[in-house]
Length: 357
Image 1 (cartoon, rainbow, N blue to C red):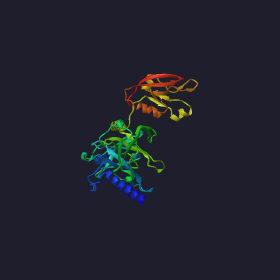
Image 2 (image 1 turned 45 degrees about the horizontal axis):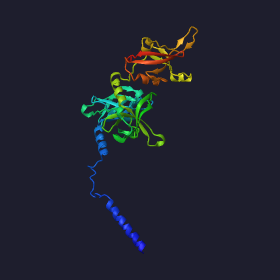
Image 3 (image 1 turned 90 degrees about the vertical axis):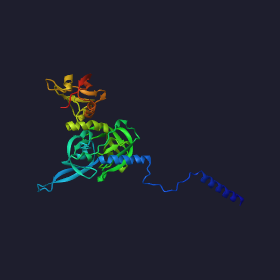
Image 4 (image 1 turned 135 degrees about the vertical axis):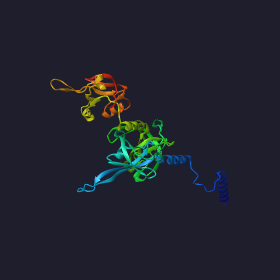
């Protein structure tokens, strides 16, 4: 009996001591309407400021109503997201969002719909530039950030129209940098941002924002193996800053010219050739002026390889994609060092790149 009483007394004192150590609980009801964590307040503020810039893109095609009729009907064949680039009416989206479109319409946040004019496309970078004739007061461009300042772990926000549901927000972090994805033209898009912020069908072409509400990427693709949570990829804003002025001026992406026609990649691979063989050089262009040569034919009709490009300014060249990516790092008038193999001899050329024709 004494032991039982002793245990009961001990448990009582332990309970009292634990109660004294617990912090006081505020039993007053919290005002949820005014209370936000710092992170919640930041997310809400960014969404309110950025969402007016996000637009709904509708890809329409003209189709005959039936086989025996000449009547043509406009049919929506896809939707996606875009965003206001400037208050002059320029809209940026993914190129694959408008692929095959006969007519594109843009719906702004006030639900007004505007016919869009295609200004330019850069399929290799999966970017397209449209323009609408909407009043400036309806156009709210996003502030531009610097994707070169990103770090893994930084907070990012994606706004888009997934599954036709307009102006949807998802939040995540930068999960990797320097990724590479392929465009529909099978060109490599470099320095892509990887994020765990949910990017679903319809989000394509929408903005990826940092915690200051600045544009740091254009949401483009997602990988979702085995119906898992998936990861998303965004084209970095520093690439967009470079491409948009080109689309405004030329209607397409432009790069300086070397002035060569190379063989198909699979032709060289099948023959075990290291590098990118030049099939032909264009007279009066940089490569020809520097002394580079293409295929040669002797008097008996035998064909011999000319120069095989293996390096441009320190970048190894194995494919057409490698060559184009190396040239895109430069401007017309820049001088680059091109290393080639010719008859098993290594040659170096200093070439001044030409402007696009």
